[in-house]
Image 1 (cartoon, helix red, strand yellow):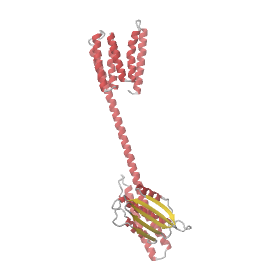
Image 2 (cartoon, rainbow, N blue to C red; image 1 turned 90 degrees about the vertical axis):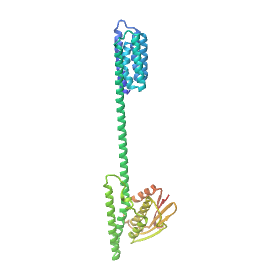
Image 3 (cartoon, rainbow, N blue to C red; image 1 turned 120 degrees about the horizontal axis):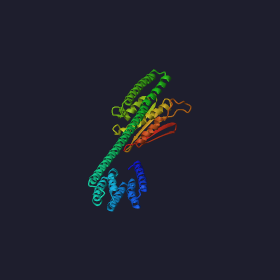
Length: 376
């Protein structure tokens, strides 16, 4: 029983006790035994509000005592009416036992007491059965309502969990696209900025032609990457983007060739022990590509002009080590391009995600970016 139902039943019992006392006080032949006979069923019903099985047993005990005392008319009626409360609040086996015991007590009362007529017994049994059926129907309705509420709560929780998962996937995909835009497009724009400075400061027709070709090539590449990113963002579902598929996958060898072309106006030295046939996982190779691009992009942005870059790649049985170093500009030289440091922060996160390490330091007039990536 709910708390509200218990309170309502207690109020009804208190009202019943008050009425009984008023009737007994006005009756000229009232005695203490009459008071006990009236209050016993009420007390049993009060126990029912605390524990339905205990209250039902108390009511059966009171009815049995009244039956042997020879006065069981009102108790048998209360016994029949209480069958609905018992079946509503108690387990099925206990409800069945109570109904059977109640029917036996009504039959016993009819046999031992003259207060019950022959027609009263079927009427009491019918009242008890109807009350039990009503209580059972209410219990089933309550169980169905609770099951539906639990089902709705479960569906709501699953839907909210699905939405949170989807939002997390969308956020992760957006973050990945932002990384791709920074790693690819920022590098292209940095090369364009460097070649634009070459156009401003060089009078050589050949140098200017090389710079124009580099700007044209990098501009076209940047536009293609932006279109590809926009197509991914416009998709309704956060499906894996094509920026990391085999069709668009960048390799270390291809990236080194692109860097040679980008740094044609400067100095680029590459020392690699990585053989062309070395097998790398896609995640490790893409991370290595990001390290190379970020290192060269930082060299163009913050290094000497023209840039002087050295790349050292070493592989062993269990790790891949990449070092990108560049000559630092003179102390009084202005910075060519402002930077928010986003690239190194995301690169460190990406490297740590794959169990690697990333470190930066300045020594002997050079800036060194070193990454170690596990191969196993």
